[in-house]
Length: 213
Image (cartoon, rainbow, N blue to C red; front, side, top):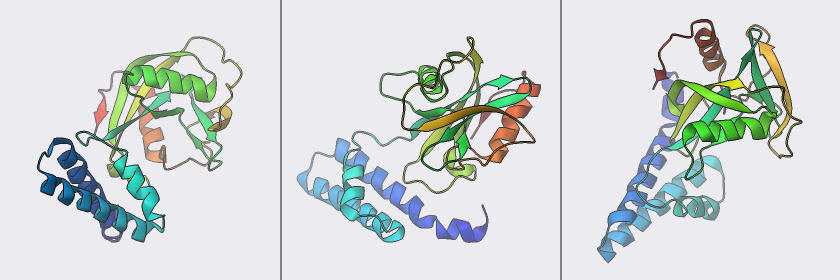
């Protein structure tokens, strides 16, 4: 990320930090005057986000207010399946671009369980998660800005057989295997070309340690 881009997204860093301070303060604060201050901090975070994104203030404020307890990063998991030197990708209905199957980890799920579930729901492949290839801080890897601080976990998965028909869903509309030098247009909010390249390196060198940060 160049210096100009960093300056253009500093507001997002401020929003995340203000929201985290407010959320954690409201979780632990007992004094009513402190509660009022933390509520105001949350309002300011929502106001800043609304100004810079053009989104409705009430919608953003309600989104922030729905987050309770100690503020921590959200967890996104991605399933990595290789076959004949090709990687499995799914086509997103939202932007028409391609990504690794995956999504948010739900409460009560282990990350590997969420990865297996999301991979099946989005691709039709039943799998076992066999190795954690990477744990990336989304903000450090060239993705577009996002309101939440997100960790992305990439699991190498082994297919348990031929895929079933794509389960009914509103997120993906096609599935395919692609060679490293013939990738389709990627959904950069979900996966980047650099990440795909690194995953192929893991495929060729299975003893590589897990990447992090």
